[in-house]
Length: 149
Image (cartoon, rainbow, N blue to C red; front, side, top):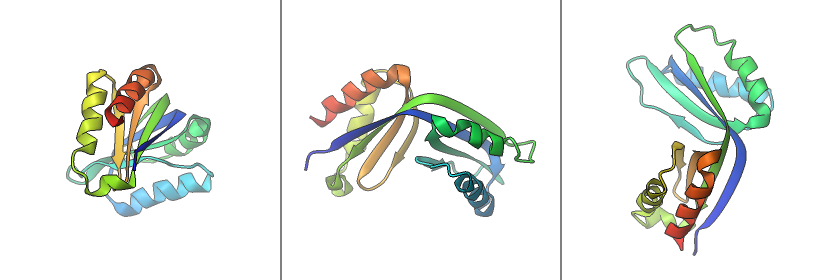
């Protein structure tokens, strides 16, 4: 099966740095965001650094104000929210990737050859998603498309 590539634009990356490394806290973050009817897409949790960690996720640019209204209420002066909007997500989907070593390496090599800034990577057995800046989208998309042809 040939991989399919899908793209989404107007994506905001939200990074919550230095949050408690506690699944209960993380659950509350996503419950509150869901209550605001905000769809979260890519999620990445960094390994804990002692009792703190960083959490990254993406939302639609349209949901940025709602999400910021919540993250600004986090009553922990150590938490540092970082936001980057106007990004694009490139997703490679192929059920055949599950038992095929090297697909991610090939995609990453091609993105590197295009000198694109990758903001976030998430994967599953059948999908690799890369978040890139809008200014790097065309180069990244072309390079990844070439890697899969």
